[in-house]
Length: 73
Image 1 (cartoon, rainbow, N blue to C red):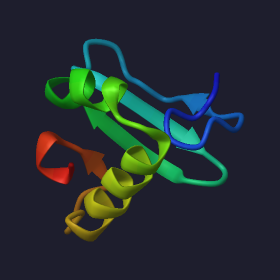
Image 2 (image 1 turned 180 degrees about the vertical axis):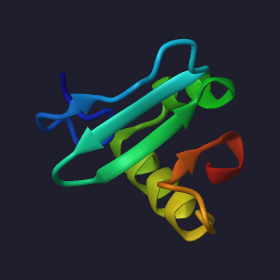
Image 3 (image 1 turned 120 degrees about the vertical axis):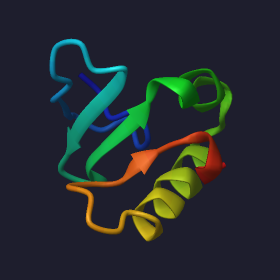
């Protein structure tokens, strides 16, 4: 698959029954897109997606990896 942010080759790490997507990208790293943010994420430009991932990374806290939520846009 392609990374949802940078479009480079990536792995789909989404577990069964997860509401959203989990991506493993060698460029962007591992990250999640929450199901509640998916519509907004799809409509976002590449720059907006990159900025959302940066915001998610700054809000990560103790989570395993950044989660892109509506608050990240």
